[in-house]
Image (cartoon, rainbow over all chains, first blue to last red; front, side, top):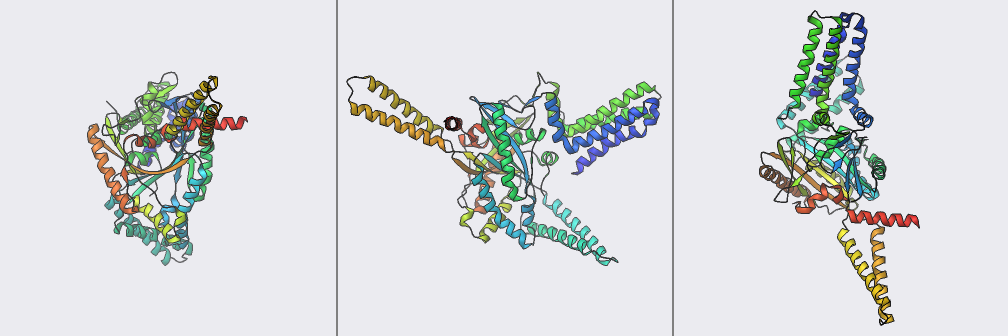
Length: 274
Length: 276
C-alpha cells in the first residue's frame, strides 16, 4: 500500500472512529450511531481493498452502462469494453499480469533463477503458438527519480544490516532470519550495482488484453471470457500474479491505450512492480 | 473549471471534520445531532471515494437512462502529421506516438546463454526511457480484407459470366465449361482463405507527452518516440521505426486488430462447416 492511501485511510477512518467514540453522547440513538460509524469504516476498507467487487456490483444492480468514449461502452457488469462496428461486437477484456519472478531474477544470484530466466523466451513463444486468437501483453514502465531511489535503497540496506548484526549478536541467532536478511541485502546490492552500471530504476505495471468478436454482445462476451480463461492457463507457466480486471480499472486500462498516465495516477490505480 | 481530486477530498474532509466537531462541541438536540452525524459519515465515505472514483463523479450526476457517459468525444484523433494520435482529458492535450520493434529471431534458434541474454536485454529495454513508456507484444489477425474482397469480386464476376454464357445459345460448350471452371476455382480459393485464421505478432512501444496545443504535444511525443526507437535499436540490434498513418490504428482499434471482412468470412465459414 502506498503512503498516500495510508493517509486517506487514516484520515477518513479516523473521523468515523471519532463519532464511534462519541456514540454515548447520542443518548438512545447511540447504538445506531456506533453501528453506522462501524459500517462507514467497513465500507471505506471494502472500497480500498475490494472495489473490484463493489464497483461491478453497483453497476450491475443499477443497470449502469458506461460510455468511456464515442463508439465504445462498458456493459453493466463493467468487465469489458465493447465496440459495435458493422454488425459485429468487439469485446475487449483485461487481465493483470505482474511477472514478479522474472524481474527479480536478474537481481538474484541463484542459479535456478537464471535457468528460469533462460526458459522465459521459450515459454513466451509457446504461449503465442497456442493462443490462436488476438491478445496483447503490455508493460508500462515508469522511470523513477534516480537519486531518491538510490537514497531509499541505501537507507533500506542500512536498516537490514543493522537488523542482521543485531540478530547475529543475539543470544539465540536464527539461521532462517539471517539467511532471509542476507538475501534481502544481496537483492538491494544487486539493484545498487545495476544503477551504478547505468540502468535507470523503473516501476512497471503489466497487463494482458484480449479481444473477441461476436454477432451479439453475449456471443462476444462469452468468447472473451473463454479467451481470458485460456490466457490465464497459458500464462500460468510464468508464475504470474494474474487475475481478471473488473470495474473502474477496466476504464483506466482502456484509456491507457490512448494516452499513458502520469506516475502518480498509475501508482494510485494499480500495483506496480518495483 | 475542472476540480482536482485532492481539492475535492480536502473540501469533503473539512466538511466531515466540521460536522463531527458540531456533534462534539455544540449543545444541540439529540435528533439534530444524529442527523449531523449521519451527514458527517456520508461526507466521510464520499471523501474517500474521490480517491478511486473521481473520473466518475460528474458523469454520475449527469447520468441519463442508466447510461453514464464519461466522455462522448472520439477516443483519439490522428494528428495532421499522421504519425501520432491526440487525446484530450479535461483541458489537457496529450499526444501519443508509436514505435514498431521488428522481431527476427525465434527462441528455437538460440542456445541457453543467448536466451538468458535476451531476457536480460528485455529487462534493460524497460529502462531506456526517462519518461513513461508502454511496451506491447500483440498477436493480431492478419488483414485479408482487401484480398478477400478481391477474390469475392472475381468470383461474382466469373459467376455472372457463367450465367450469361450458359443462357447464350450460341456459346460454345468448351467456353461455358472454362468459365464454370474459373468460377469453381475462385470458390475454392475463397473457401480456403477463410478456413484458417492467420495471426501475426507485432511488438511496439508507445509514449505520451502533454502539451498546451496539439502541435506541441505531438512534437514532444515524437521526440520521445525517436529516443525510444534509437534506444531499442541499440539494445536489440534491430531497426525500430516510427509507426505512421493507418498502421497506428492496428494498435488502437479492435476492428483493425481483427479486421471486419476477414473475421466475418471466418465466422461464416465456421458456421457453414458446423451446419454440414
